[in-house]
Length: 278
Image 1 (cartoon, rainbow, N blue to C red):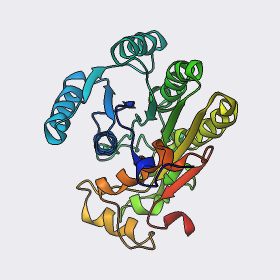
Image 2: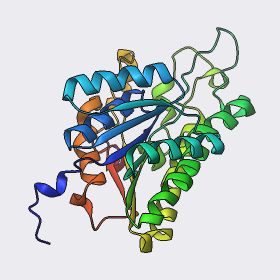
Image 3: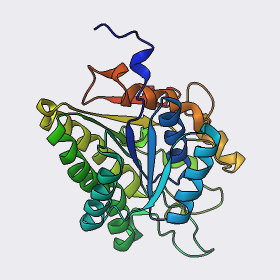
C-alpha cells in the first residue's frame, strides 16, 4: 500500500446513492460524502424534500449533490433510476441503504396501542418490511449488480443498535396504565434492522470475488427533540450517558465507504455510546 493514510479517506468524484436521502441521517450521510469529495445522490419518496436537501448541501459545500424521486419498493422504478444515474454519472460507486420507516406511537386515549405485538397491524408490517428490508434488497440487487459488472463498489447498510439487541420496552412505559395498554417499540423496526445485518453478511460473501465490499453501521439513538422523560430513560441504558448528535456518525460513514476500510467486509460497526455492551 503506497497511498498515504489521509488520501485513503477521499472519494473524489465518486457517485454515492443514498436511499432515504431526505431524512435526518440521510442528510448527514450526504454531508459525509461531500466532505470526502464524493457526489451524493439523494433518493427519496419525497422528491421535493430530496431536492431541497440536495440544494442546501450543494450551496454549503460548493459542490455537486442531487435529489431524485424513487420508490425503492418497486423494482422497475429502482431499475429506471439506476439506468438514469448510470447514464448521468458513468458509474455508481457507493450505495448507502438508509431508508426505513420508524413509526411513532400515537394512540388515542382508551384504545389499545396498535404498536403492541398482539394488535400490530399486518398493513404496517408489510409497509415497514417493504421499505427497509425489501428496499435494501432491491437496491442492492440493482445497483450492486451494476457494481459487480465493473468489479468495484461499496455498499453500506444502515442498521441499528436494535438490530443487535431487543428494544427495552421499559423506556416507553407510562405510569398509571395497565400492562396491556402500554405503548411499545413496534416489532418491525427491530426485525428489519436484524434483517439488514443478515443481508450485509450475505452480500459480503456473495460478491467478495467481484470487488464489492459490504458493511453495516449500527447507530444508537439520535437526539431529535424527543420528550425529556424518554431521553432520560434511554440515556440510563447508555454507558456514555447521552444520545448521539445527528452529525456524530459522519466520520464512520467516511471510513466505511472509502479505501480507509479496504480490508473490511461483512462487518457491523456499532456506534451506540456503549449501549450494546450492557
